[in-house]
Length: 218
Image (cartoon, rainbow, N blue to C red):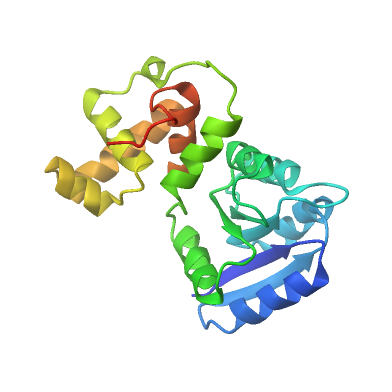
């Protein structure tokens, strides 16, 4: 089964390059293209892509607004935002809006393909240091702490490990748990915090103060 992708970027040359890269992989199929975020809802409804590669800056409807609209829909596609600069307010806002991760436009082709496969499989594309710096630079001070979500001590440990970018297998090895047990704890974290995926949970952990974005997670 192939993964369907929708490309959204106002630059035709960027879309053409991405199409060439993705269509060269037998597991990926570009279903369509859009030059503006305003076209995205209709195309997603018609084409049903698994992943949307979304430029954050577009002249009419930007990628942040389009992402926010998509994640409100039932069974939304995963969104990977494309950006020229990693430490950008637009990237932070896109993650807060519900994007699963972000890619720099200069990312090597093989890494773009790997990223699309990663998020299509239900994983989050997370760069812990980059997310930490984004939150430290752009998040407003204060906010509700995640302790109010009623996380257990073990769920808190798992969330801190997620903030370090560890996979379920790595968390299991570090905390001496089974992988299935870790999956259960991750599901508990997402349910209690109201987050749709790991990326959103980690962003919430930083913005709420549950994990201090000024310091590396240990």
